[in-house]
Image (cartoon, rainbow, N blue to C red):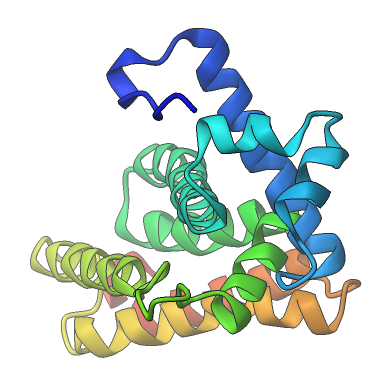
Length: 209
């Protein structure tokens, strides 16, 4: 069997096929759960053989790692432009919260799949980790830095702790995927508006009232 090509050596067709397989893995995990999402089942979803998946990925562990990477990158590509399109501190915080939740609303299967992976597939058979939580830590750290920067510019209240506020905002966002698993009809839009209002009041400077 041919070995997997390095990313810079992959053709457009190979990249497209990998993306198709990752998408099928996400939808399959969201539909039947992590444990039941075998490579054969994922392959059948898009009408290919299991061998085609094995050509592009070394196994289920490799495929699941790519699923996590692709979901994170898709989220960043969706959220960051919406945040940086805003020019004031309060508007950026609102955009950060609402765009995170809008992405979750528009990509429900991504969120359900990630929850399934975290619950049932975070560890490989040899004890390694597919998901180590560092991306959540990075997201919180970057948010903390942005809150501190906006405070220094006088665009947000200066008397709150940016680290604690970042943790609180991320917690309010990161609970949503788990809620979607429990309640498919959960109204993310309404929740997002309420959460954005709460954190707007908690961070807004008197000068921007």
